[in-house]
Image (cartoon, rainbow, N blue to C red; front, side):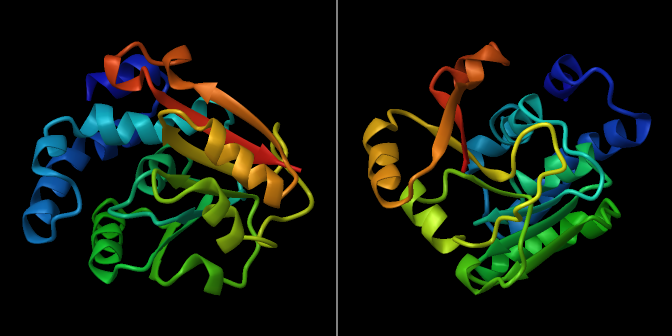
Length: 210
């Protein structure tokens, strides 16, 4: 929990309470439905919660922003971001039903009314969003293909609407392949710019927009 307070010192008492509850909630649900590796559950705040919150270092979402999380798994990055931005609406989508159950149960336990989680494939979603986010789910080409046409035209935030992906490692070939298919502008932002833990040395944000 000290990771969160160190990098996000202005969280409210309610947000602090919600973040503190995540460890016990994920330990409980992970014992029922394995959505996080046993090893990673010990590093929940660094490897999952803080990693998810990295997105907040490049944009502070304005109220009424709408966001879809493709392959939301057990709720990352949706749950931490929903705690940090209670006036932003999040839709978590995953094709694995048991993972969606975990997101729903944790959102209910924390009374996060800004989170909806559904068992579906991203390409079946008909709505449009300000941003589409994802964390280490699939190659960039696939993520854009699944969500093509689902970005709203008009932007209300300080950065243009688009895709924000949390990824790691060498991405040059992956991004080149995606760019050849879908012409876009992108920024590759190293997370070591924001966090000094070794875990973030190879972690990046890929922000894509037209």
